[in-house]
Structure formats: C-alpha cells, structure tokens
Image (tube, rainbow, N blue to C red; front, top):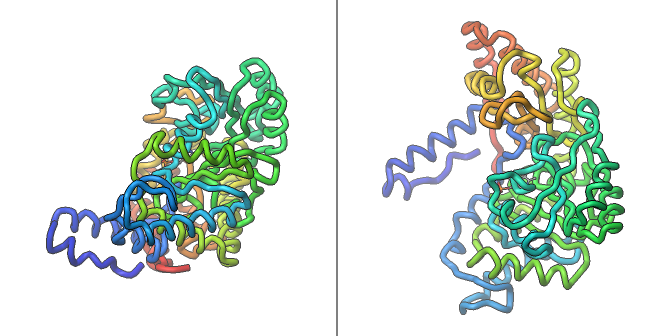
Length: 423
Ligand SMILES: *Cc1c(COP(=O)(O)O)cnc(C)c1O
C-alpha cells in the first residue's frame, strides 16, 4: 500500500492525521486473520473520499428529490447493473449503509409487527441482527432460532428447523451466519420456506465474495427469494450493504421503499461509487482465483490445527471461517487468546462457541478467516506457518522470550507481503 496522501489532513488536523497514519502503519505491520476484514483497492478508497460525498440524492435513479443528479444517477445505475450481473439476479438495492440496515430494511419489507422470523441461534453462529435480545427489532418481530444438530460436524438440525417452521409459521426464514464454518443446504431451506409460505432469505455477509467468485454455491441457484450482504468482508469492497432480489419485481419495489424512505435518508453516493468499483473488480477472472485461494489458505490452517489436536467447532471449515475452542485447547479465554495473539502481531477476534458457558465479553473461542491475508498474497505455505506460530504463542503464553521471537517472525512475514493497491 502506497503511503496514503494525507497532506490536507496533516495541515488541518494533526490529531486525526496521527491516528490515521498510526492505523496505516498498524495494518502494514500486522497479520490480519479477522474474517470480516479485508484490504480494499486504492480505487475503492479514492471513490469513498470523492466529491460524491457532497451530494444529496434521496430517491432512486430518475426519481430523486433534488436536482443535479446526472452523474449520481449514472453511478447508481452502474452499481445496480454490476451487482445483478455478479450475483445472477434481476434486481438490486445498493443503498443500504451497511449489513445491519440491509437486514433491517428486508425485515420491514417482508414482515409486519409481531410476525415471526426464523434464523440461526446466535451462539451457533447467527448474527446480532438474527435476533439478539439487544437488537432493536427484537422488540418488533418475534425471533425463533434453529441450531446445529451436531457441534462436531456442524450439521444443521433440519428436522427441527422444519418443525419450528410448521409451528411458528414465520414470514421469513434466514439462512446465514457470522460464525459458522460449514455450508448450508440451501435446497432444504427453500423447500421448507415454500411449505410454510415464508420468504427464503440468505444473509451472505461473510461469504459474498466466495459466492461472487464461484468458490461457494449461490443461494439464488437453489431458489432463494432474497439475499442481503455487506460489501466489505470477502467481497473486498467499501463498508456498505447490499440487497439482491432474485426475480420478483413486486419484492424489489417493497425493498426499495423499505430502504428509502423506510429506514434511510440520502444514500451515500461516494460509497455507492466505491461499491460499483468493487463489483467491477469482483467480475474479473482474477477474483475467482482470489476466492479459491481464500479457501485453500483456510484449509491449510485447518490442517495444522487438526494435526496439533486443537478443538474446532464443526470440526473444521468449508467456507474459510474457522472457530476454535481455545478454552478447552489451551486453558485461556477467547479474550486472553486475542490479547496474546495481538502481542505477536496477529489480529483475530474472540467469539462465543456453540452453547458457550462463558459470556460474549469473554467467550471460549477465537474466530478467524483468510480473506485479508489472501489479498496480501499469502499462500498455503505461509498460512501453515502463521497457524503454527499462533499455536506456539498460545502454548508458550508465559514465555516472553519465545513470544518475542515469534513476534519477530510475524513482523518479517508482514514485510514480505505488502498490502497491494490494486489486484
Ligand atoms: C457482518 C454481518 C452483518 C452486519 O454488517 P455490518 O456492516 O457490521 O452492519 C450482518 N449479517 C451478518 C451475517 C454478518 O456477518
């Protein structure tokens, strides 16, 4: 990553200049295994900082509430066209500010106050927007949860999913996760949704890139009605959300209304331009190579964990995400493990494991994934090395000398693999 041009910030605001420069240095010098993070291209960063930030564009292309929309209309139309091409569907709304608003708008579009939404249990991998008690919409909709049947293989309890669907008659069944490491049986979700008259919705926030790059199956191929996602995880775009509708015009119109004026005001056109650039990048053949390598790199890490007998939830990974039980494997909590790994220059995040007896603030697990390291060009060999270094650090958590040596090795590796400006 070329040094960011921050001249104007430096002149005007020394404090923020220092913070941004510090963050740039931190990113360059550490190895990032947080599965929800990635490095965007310089082009995406330029679009997010562009003059489009100055424009109000409430409404949709051709139907705005302010004048002067010649270029913003073109930006949004291009973004929509690329998004539908990338995911093989008819309609897209590119305005959601992030993943949460994409889900919130979708719930409001498809369900009414008091209706039921059936989604993955949070400790089994579901996201906060799938019905956490602190999620504001848990007061408006009734969330019911399915789980894994077998924590060691990750198999979902589809019989229970079916019986819950028959019992609660949900308006929406959500297939998606933020900490689940296996593939879902999309056909089963669609069959069950059809039987009970629910919309089949996939929240692919973490694996959007993998699906766009053909490294994992696309829920639309199984007949899902609607997909929501973020654009900043494996899809490697700017921070943002996206809603995709397979073919129903009526549904697409409901979604548009639910986003604006439903829950948002003016769209962030700078970010929509950045999304459009990200979609263009993801449509290139190189992106398919990239996503296949994400998976190979994750498998290389999984192999090391298996060899060294580390407990993984669901026994391993099929989608690049890995969830380890560090509490039973190393006698440290997720928070402690996160801190030990940060001290050697590897960033990961703590996470609850299935039916965790510990709390989300200090859970039993560590979650990691490989989109960011793969962007930096690391391959299987280096991922194996990182996995071994992580485990060495956790095993030698009280040996400061050993940890310093490991940190030096991680630092060396970071230097060898600079963050690219384009792909
Ligand atoms: C990350 C994520 C989201 C939310 O995205 P934000 O951009 O953080 O709001 C929603 N659903 C799933 C499954 C996610 O992993």
